[in-house]
Length: 147
Image 1 (cartoon, helix red, strand yellow):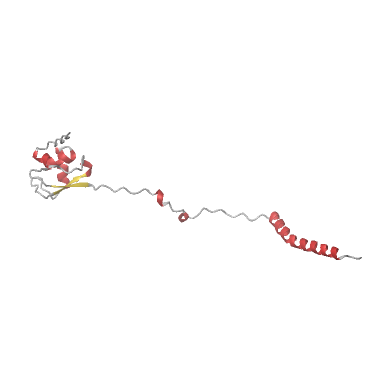
Image 2: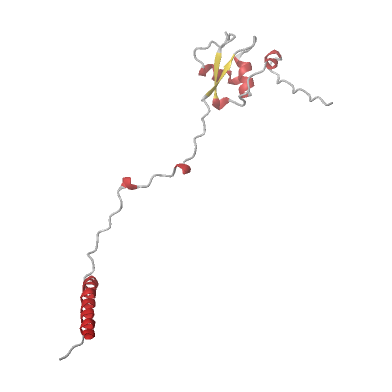
């Protein structure tokens, strides 16, 4: 049998090609014949929760204090007047006295600091002198000056 060089080269290349592709086919065939063993699915551990985004956190609103501190500035201030100004009712003087156990309601002095419970408040505006000197009457608004 007389083989030409060309025939030998083609046969050699075909053999190499066959050798090169067979391992890939063998691996594919094994995978198709034997499915992988089923893995048991377990839930992630509790601490594996992703952290909440910072942007989603609500900014905390500054809380108002549980009381308002009124400093006695004017002669003639009484707990009843203070209660009427801040709470709208003179009868709340008892609740204010109870919130200030060290205060003698009959002896209020200039500079005394009186705590008024926040749940009683109707206003946080400081009590004006006109309210004290007017006997508890709300000060009249100043008329607007028109040119």
